[in-house]
Image 1 (cartoon, one colour):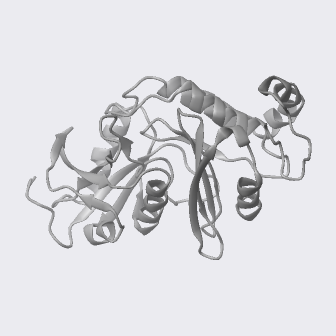
Image 2 (cartoon, rainbow over the protein chains, first blue to last red; image 1 turned 120 degrees about the horizontal axis):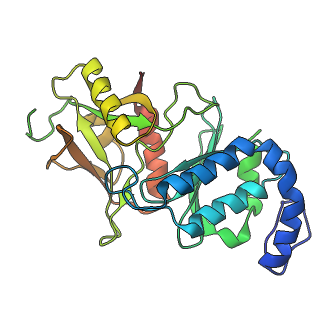
Image 3 (spheres, helix red, strand yellow; image 1 turned 180 degrees about the vertical axis):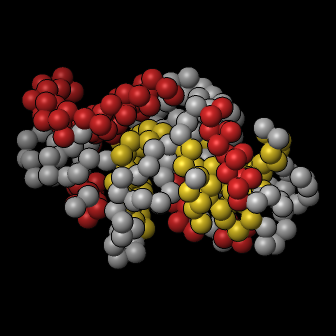
Length: 149
Length: 134
């Protein structure tokens, strides 16, 4: 099941079905998040081999790359675009940062999990792990509402 | 450069690369504090930090610029931290065994935390750093 938005009650029984929906959403996202999408592709091309930092960094996996791309493409339209990044442990990150210190950082690993780290305005610091399969579930959508806007 | 154990008051540095965060000019971004995960020991997450020793900030920036060119990344500057700030982070320790890299002596941060707790601590550490932009 992939849930596209918190408010969206429609769910999809398979990735294939969801992908059809994504194609429609993709066009607007390419316009809005074109730079982020390009950067994500660039990260994968540059970091898909071990040692990309000239030391001992792990390669970015296809699983992590696809997960990050999925999250970027299905980002609800009313949220700002994240900044993609890459970790030396091979995880791709999508980050929303605000000047007041708020932060939502998602990291996608090669096992199909997304790790989230959140710094909220009230000083709360939270973190957790969930499967990419859930997409933007209530937890992450709530964080986005607090950090992205 | 001394390879002695890290002393109280010592300054440590990490080089900050990658692109500028459009939402936070001057704020640390990229992956300077993100540890690498040693495959054979799932509890060991580490990253290299560099000791200032008696180098000046300009010398540290020159070294960083050289390194960034070597790894073909854009160089944003140096993040400077005191060893006391590093040691305030729970489950994190700086090894006393230095390793030589590109004529610099690096030390190793041990992270006894797994994802995602280590990234949360890394972010807190990054926010304690004094960033010196190039």
